[in-house]
Image (tube, rainbow, N blue to C red; front, top):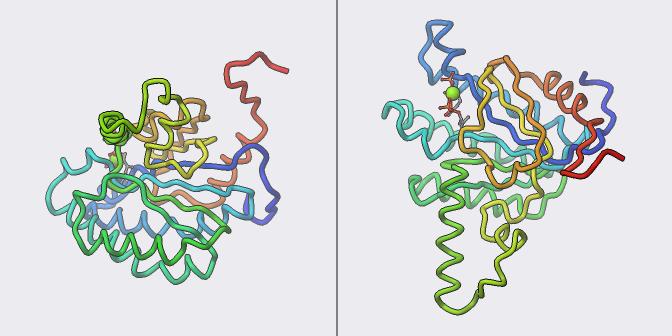
Length: 241
Ligand code: IPE
Ligand code: IPE
Ligand code: MG
């Protein structure tokens, strides 16, 4: 629980699929966007906790490449929420020495949001207390497609030969080139699927699927889950010691 904040072993990078905002609102007879706003307000407490329990990387799935299929009003509301979130949280994140980065395809986002994202990345580039990565218009298949496109461009121009293509070099073409692989992926809201999140990077991640809807998810629950996984024997294909 929060309070006894001792560092966890093994869990350096936690990635979260923040799901259940819509159901949280619908169950209360409220518009889905109220759920998204409530969900966004849960992030701060978890960001504050991570460094205290030894989590140096936190990656949050905020909007997928498939989420454009939603009603126009919900998508517009989410985009406006992301803009307001950056404006509202930038100062505190920077004061807390959090380095913020975004992954995903920015080209489909609006100019104002793209500029806010870039300025937050720039402002916090020298911070090292926590690495917060927000996946916005992110999809694992889209990321791999863009990576293969750049790789084949480099190959066509003679900068890359077939023997240069290794697991490591592929990693450099991904949006996550500066991140270690996630050790633990948490999904809230009871769904047990990965919905196109970090497909390449999660090859050996542990998965925790919890019933709590994201707007009800607390830092205390986050800490319990992380601690529950921190003693696991992760064998990466080898035999147990
Ligand atoms: C997650 O909550 C937030 C986004 C996908 C943007 P949902 O909006 O998917 O909530 P449910 O799954 O409909 O309850
Ligand atoms: C995954 O949730 C994406 C985010 C949390 C941003 P979805 O709600 O979009 O996933 P599906 O559609 O239930 O698989
Ligand atoms: Mg959902």
